[in-house]
Amino acid sequence: MIRPLDTGYRADVDTRARSLLTAAIVVSLIGAAAHRLPIQTSWKAWMLAPLRPALIFAGSIRSALVESVSGQDNTTRSATSALLQNSLLAARADSLERELNQLRSTIALPAVMPVKGTIATVTAQFAGLGQKSLLIDKGTAVDVKVGSIVLAAIGDRAAVVGRVVEAGPTVSKVMTVLDPSCRVSASIRGSSGHVFAGAQDRALARLEFVPRDQEIATGDEVLTSEDGTIFPEGLLLGHVKYLGSGSAVFHDIFVEPAVPLEKIRYVWVTSPGRSR
Amino acid sequence: MANMIPMSWARIVTAVMVAIVASFIVEPVLGMMLPIAPAIPLCVVLAVGACNGPLFGVVCGMLTGFLVDLLGSSALGVNLCAMALVGYLAGRLVRIIPPWPDAVRVVVAAPLLFLYVPATWLLARLAGISAPLGGQLSALQPAAAFLVMNLIAAVLVSPFLSVLRSRR
Image (cartoon, rainbow over all chains, first blue to last red; front, top):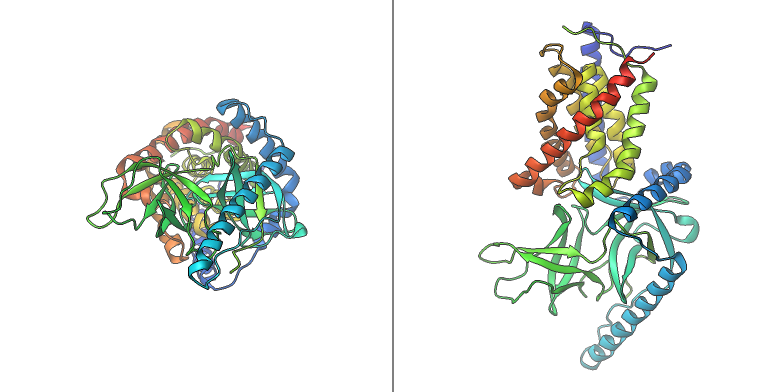
């Protein structure tokens, strides 16, 4: 039996539609105000927890489709885990070497690279509608927290995927570095103080506040910098794809992320933030 | 005026769920092949509104937007309100156009897709999120690509929604 919502042109139908639209506006204003509060909640991830099997099923179909379009990806979970651990250990060795050199001249302690973590499978991704986020199949049950950083191995390098913004018991949501609202402290050619900003246009991010007088070339590596508060320094963010016209003061730099987010299957989730 | 065949609550939920799952699975693949992947849930909201009236449009928009907000990383209400607005206006538009086929109605209503861009931008700014889709607003070419891709997707989904409307 079909129960009609809108059977024609009755006046009360329009009234109901207007009332619902008003309710939607009110909800959005409340949601916006709540989002501005300085609290972190994971209620959305908790609500998604019962849907985990369905998300994993849909995610496997998506992975198969992506692989069929972009070529077979033979990486296994254990191989990815070993690759990630190796790349992180190599990055840590680099970081400790830099630390040693810095300690010679200053007493300030630089960042320590987190190596302990867990490997997670990407179950879903949302790359549209003004947001670029991933869902992973690990949550608070294995010590994944809000703020945990998410990495991937690109060759022998550790590259940034994003950070956990909501953590449910078995599902967590990751805001990727391509999300329009994502900002990461970045360095290029050894100079820091720049901002890696999420994608405003297609799949390219931007590197902001790079002075015009600094020499930049296509293919330059963009790394996380030592002045950030979330990611350890030295992690790969991407490569310079091309230079725009820019302003009189700053370059207009478009960066291709190091991690192909649409193809990624496994990620490494480490403890939140960086220790000093 | 057109004699519209009513849709049921269950069919609205079905259409929304299928749209969300399709966006889940298909959008990353389309994103690799096209300059901008169409936002399938938004297209479904537009098509439902344009073919069924404002109440359908606003209910479908609210439900779809809520799910997109739930699954995404933005504040609750950004997509909910923006999609409800698109669905409502698409439904209002259907009152002033002749009883054309569904696909034609969707094409006529397609410019309303553009409202989604400033609506989400404004709501995200209110929530303190820095300008999603701001780049698409500022650059004409991606904005045009956004409209064209979603228009094509909306026309393609309209026959499926017609089946949902007409089958007993």
